Image (cartoon, rainbow, N blue to C red):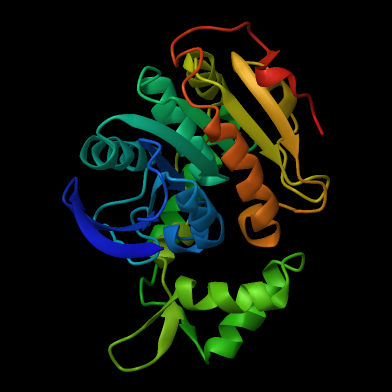
Length: 310
């Protein structure tokens, strides 16, 4: 297994891109782009990325801007969803010259939906791991969100959030992710922290991510992107303990070629808690290749490959 982590200049920022390749595997010609969730990092896909690489795929997992080892935006800037999508588009152009599959978890799933909806002819297959977007809010919350954002930004301290030790980091992850085995979280902690110049330890993400965005999620716009997605789409649930918006079924129904898989006891962080099961499901899905094409075939609400909810 060959694993590299390299900076890529993208839209004026250096993004850290983790790549996984198995030189002994027969190449499939498919690049798999793995997009992580909120306060996560591309490097923590390793438990899933390595089996996919052993299957012959070229696996690319970037740290999105302001997360992991990627650069943070400068003073006077902010993190807006279109920025993530523009970064993904640039990385695809640079790193996926031919066939492309996309996997998005949580926030990364929403990014994947926006990108695929904007470029439906570019993505061969799409997997959304509890990535159907956040809860919807009406226009009545707009003023309150703007007020909250202004307060957050006024008192924002972007000094890295310090940790007492690596054991402190592990303990905090255990508290936030009780369904993930502690030994697994112990391997995640070094990937989600960074050593500061003075030798201290801090979380790797930009504290600005903790502020409330002034822009509320617009489900009507989101579903317009879902309706544009023509490729086979695997929708993966972590079961009852996962995270699901109240109107999740209605959103999934907008996908033309949706297939459902439930990892019953995985919970939301399925790429940590049930990595082997998830990698197996993703491997089966992407092994089917481009049969049927990526553009506009299949019936609305149909089940790709005939598999229903498990």
